Image (cartoon, rainbow, N blue to C red):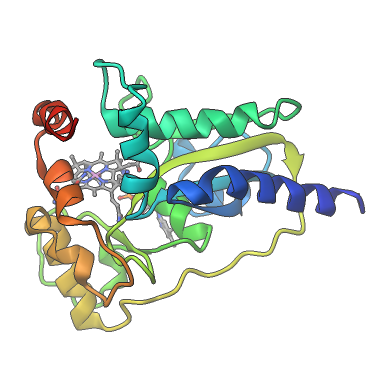
Length: 241
Ligand code: B12
C-alpha cells in the first residue's frame, strides 16, 4: 500500500505533462465521490476508490491545441472538429501510459437509453475543478414551473471553458486521495439567480460566462468559431487556411 502514492503522483504528473501545455486543465477525483451524489442509474461501474481525472479545456486550448491540429490536417470531415482534437489529445495520454488500463469517456457520449455516459458538471464539482450551481442552490427561486439547467463556474475562467472528458484508471485505487471543495465564486443569492437566468435564457450572448471577473476568456476568433452552427465551422477553418 505504501508504494502506491508515489506511483499516483507520477501518473498525475504524466497526465498533466501530456495535457496542460495544450490548454487543458486536469483535476483528480475518486469515482466514489461522483457516485455519492448521484442516483444509481448514473453511477459509474467502478469501485469507489478508483482514480479518475476530469479534463477541462481552457481558453488557450483553441490556440495551443486546436489550431495546430487543424493546420496539421489531422481533421477528418466526419464529426465535430474540436471533439476530434480533444480525442486526439486524450488518446495520446493513453498511448503514453502503455502499461496502464485507461478508460476515456467524452462529454458528448450518450448511452442507448439516451442518458449521457457521465455528468460532466457533477464530476467537475466533486473534483473541485468548477462549482456546479444548480437551481437548488438558490433559496428563493423565481422560476415556477420552468425547467432550469445548472451551470459550472470556474474561479479563473468564469464560464469560458468546457468540460471535455473523464479519464478513468480502473486498476489504480486511491483510498487516501483528499477531496478539495470547488471555489464558491458566485456566492450571493442575487448573483446565482442572475447566473442561472443568463445560462438558461440568454446563453447565446455569452454573458453568463462573465458572471465573475475572469483572468482569460475566448478571443473574438474563438467566439466566432464556437458561435457558428456546426455546419458553418468547417468553412471558417478553411478560410483561416
Ligand atoms: Co448542455 N452543456 N448546454 N445541454 N449539455 C453541458 C451541460 C456542458 C457540461 C457541456 C460541456 O462543457 N462540454 C456545458 C455546461 C458547461 C458549464 O456548466 N460551464 C453545456 C453548455 C455550455 C450548454 C449550452 C450553453 C449550449 C452550448 O454552448 N453547448 C446550452 C445552455 C442551456 C440552454 O439551453 N439554455 C446547453 C443546452 C443543453 C440542452 C440541449 C438543453 C441539453 C439539456 C441540458 C441539461 O439537461 N442540463 C444539454 C445536455 C444534454 C448536455 C449534456 C450532454 C448532458 C447534461 C444532462 O443530460 N444532464 C452536458 C455534457 C455532459 O454532462 N456529458 C452538456 C442530466 C441532468 C439530469 O443532470 O441536471 O446535473 P443534472 O442533475 C444531476 C445533479 O443534480 C446531480 O444529480 C442529478 C442526476 O440525478 N446531483 C448533484 C444531485 N445532487 C447533487 C449535489 C451536488 C453537490 C452535485 C455536484 C450534483
